[in-house]
Image (cartoon, rainbow, N blue to C red; front, side, top):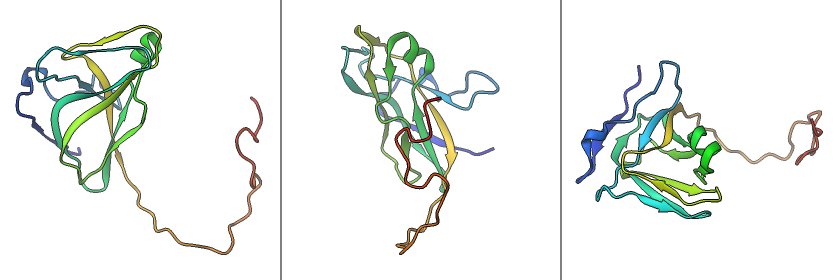
Length: 151
């Protein structure tokens, strides 16, 4: 099993615990809002905020952590992550914050300790980029933006 190391930020509420998987088959571990003042924040419709988790992490080399919205919050309240999936690189050691956006039509309260996102640990494949005079032909060719049909 892969290990991702965490450290607490100064003033973080450690009682909230580290990210955790809600079920045995979950791919994403839940991240919680960890406000130093324990107050939370209210997001107006269309607003976004950087929500602290109170954590720093060390992702192993060759991996990344992807931050993704929680489906229940997205469906019921329109709460999403505007840069989803957000990427945490293996060489980043700063505070782990989550950019949360209210795409719904009503204000939404993000309380201290609320599950705000999920994190997925994924392998990274790095490529070598080269300039080429030709590209291989395909059946699709240059078709894009709906060129493969409606259904």
